[in-house]
Image (cartoon, rainbow, N blue to C red):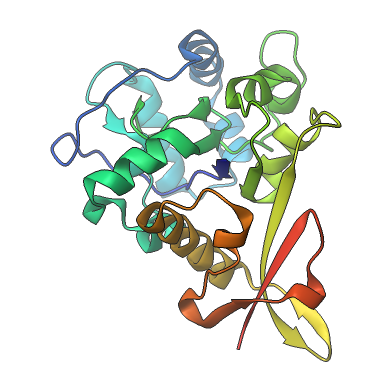
Length: 247
């Protein structure tokens, strides 16, 4: 079983909590992306990032002193958005940490795909950003099938806890034999499933935590998820989609 999740815009540096075990797989590609960003003007970066002046200055300063191998933080700890707060990996047991290292992969516009203990530095770059790198018109074209190939699911189910922006880097290259399971967290409103972005991020983090704490390896075990008042709804689900409703 492989679990894919999105990164977070909010990042931190923490060299003390856990040791970095490896470098990201696609460091050469990341370096090329970094060089492309470093050549951009302030206005170009602000347009690319959709940021205010304060955030643009902060992230441009990061680019200017960027060193991909210095003061790196394990990816699982470096991202600190809502999903990662609810995952709370800093208090995982050794068994839970081993589980996510084996099963969890983080998709990234900057790094491509990350294992939990790959060392990363703070950056700002969404997968859907309109950045031309080399001969590629955008990051989807630049990364191509590399993320799918690196996932190396070997016939295992792929559990999709990523946003559509990131999930489609994998979906586009799925083979007929692949099992790709979308996870939906929502509420029933007038008989229809409605997803609220913030609540879904919280639930995605909780689900990763649930899977790690319970060593989940089957879909039947995954259907038992019941945190944040979500419960599996068989009537709304299908072979390739598991729907959880808060009730």
